[in-house]
Length: 215
Image 1 (cartoon, rainbow, N blue to C red):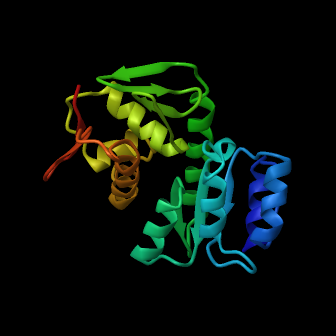
Image 2 (image 1 turned 90 degrees about the vertical axis):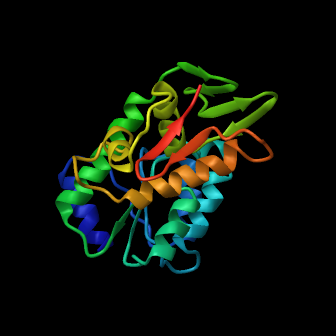
């Protein structure tokens, strides 16, 4: 699968580096930051979830788009991957057209997100250059997708946003595609960061609809 995927992506015009273990991947990533990282979960020496967690602990890798491509498609496996900081998740067996679309969407979003805009809502201050959100004197580092999700919600305050709407607006999936659990997992991770130790509830759940952030 690794070799086949490499040939397909190179044919599509991407520059691709292939490694077959997590131990090989980490030094490569330290030497040169890619535009996108595709990880399996089951790998020799170090599994993909562990790699993802290690990378997300470093500020410079917080904005690196990470896509899991794995045969481990159980709910617990998907949740573990997303909680480790992955941006998206594709389960084997997969259609090449779907994988190409996910890769293209992740790369497009990364190119458009290179902006110095600062967004302010109530006492939340989001810096789209550093992918940090400020709460008083606290600076909280967000991942690539957490930043996009929070920014979109801050740009649309007091609106009930359904998971299907967010999949189109934030993940740029076509209508009626994508997994609502992807949205739920990222909302849960975002809440854990911005609502920790705070009595404020910035992101409200609108039962039967979706989520809302209020000003």
